[in-house]
Length: 294
Image (tube, rainbow, N blue to C red):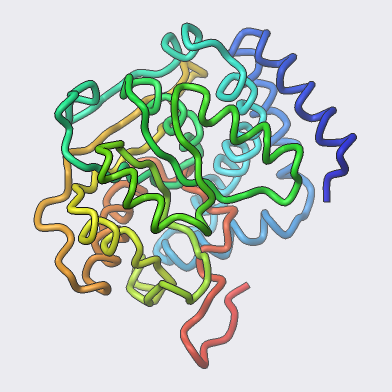
């Protein structure tokens, strides 16, 4: 666990990097990712297991290529927290291209759940969609184990007017936000354990998937609008892709609604497979009786 001193040093480094040109910072993170990929690690092993499970048809050479690219992207994403957390609004506006199928500035937007997918650019996308909304919104977060980093992350992610709430305290708060017509940002495509989850296919694998999105949308009478933060090639910044609301959602069937999210990911991940968050143990929780894949 990172010590308080280590956390303060890390924050100081990020603030310093935020002063430097984005292209330099991005290349620094990419180079560090390449270097760390050369060293055997548990995270590297997890990336390969996930890719093998989801894309068994790939050759070993192609899987190795995507794994290395992803590892570089993942490490780079942590280095780029510098500009995402501490860069000015003007700097972010120059770095983020917005490609939205809805009017983010619409003052009459109905109750909305903004569903962020865990691609490596999710941090940039989440911070900037908050800025682009030009209105107060709500956002859920997963608390960090280090209190110093957690406090800084909350302040940075909410600096454009977002109310932040821990995922553990979310349901009551989210429903209140929706009643107040605040758009609510959340991410649900990770393994948070069997509680409030169901097992539905993800690339053909029974996968522990949260049912909260459909339930919150039903009770809060909210539309669900997915978004993706994509890292642009050649160190040009990011693209915030905001999709139109899902039709006929929620259905009221927890399994069908959870499967809808996974189906959306199955459509989007092959477009930029190196950018999905493969370092996460997406298949950590297995159906009863099934052994661990990790």
